[in-house]
Image (cartoon, rainbow over all chains, first blue to last red; front, top):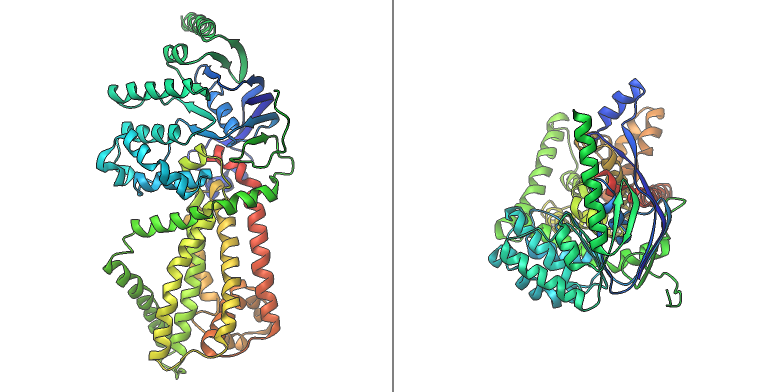
Length: 252
Length: 291
């Protein structure tokens, strides 16, 4: 379903808060550059078969989100090759959302159209999405009035109702109140039951163990381990503890 | 994998995708434009939502949309009449300023809308794979939707002041097409520049203002004949000299414009469109990490 072959992702980005021409000229005068290279993913290879629910664990900045974005086709790999078979739907950290001044309804439509669905396909799913997100009148209101929980609920509803063959989820299950969490978990289990392929990035190790049937662990862009979720989570926790101890010792 | 290998048909939504490094910085252009065309509804929906957000569909909204350009034209008319000490002006003069300003503001709005189209789209760029060219194109389509009703305002003014619509106005249509192409190219270029230099949008109003005064909007192109020889050459290199100047001459003064002006207009608009599109497409993969 998904084949990641020797993929490395290196990008150059600026570390200025707000890149401006003025700063660029000033820096040029001083002979400095503010662009730095980030090696987000280094030489990672793995294959994922249909129906796999792949958990991805790793500390912050391990390259998890970058890898998922590359599979979604948002960031191109710098080296290597990614093959994806099927319709991809993403539920990434930032959720849906286009413009805070537009209503949730308009944002769902715009996001869907940008992703390449037709107006009819979106309208056919719209009621289900609105029902699931359960936002009441807020769906017609500008999105800047939403709370962060409402925001993620809508994002989750959109992603799971677009009938994806491959669903990429980045840190989304923690969203919403207890009631919604329960419904989200139920929906995830339902999707797993339909043997959809799923990538699940999460720091909630228990939900990785509960939902996934395969997992990988990334550290500083490198693939550390691939295996059953319980094993990977065990090794990862052990590693984190060792690292923490080392740091504590350094502090002393 | 046991499935037979199929040809990747779609970089974005099809059944099989291959993502590999792009060597020349350009994605396969055929798929790119195919995918772009498939998403054309996005631009329609975008401008519709924008119109709703700005209340432009209410009675006062419509009223304001008509009043605003007329007031604008009146201000400039007054300015020019005062500055020229009320020197005798032909009857078509007010219509001329109106026609020029309306088309100029279409270009200016496409530029400012285009400039912010990518940077203000933040989240959707981070989360969805789609041809980013859709964003500046939507900005142009929004400013075109605001431009179209001003044509009716122009027609009303032209008849009220006795200028009328000359037969050469038919030729203003292809000129308008060239103006749209030029505006689109500029929108794409500025969208790219804005990603790297966020102060571009702050410079833009000044650039636009200077461009307005150096283009044949507030004065007819015959004004150029009075300039010194060397300056004339430079002034005529301004893309808006042939585009907006040509448009106003055809629409208002009813004068056929020389072939050289058509050629210059066509070269500018096609050139800027192609360069703008290529610059944008070759940089767009970088946008997700730059926002």
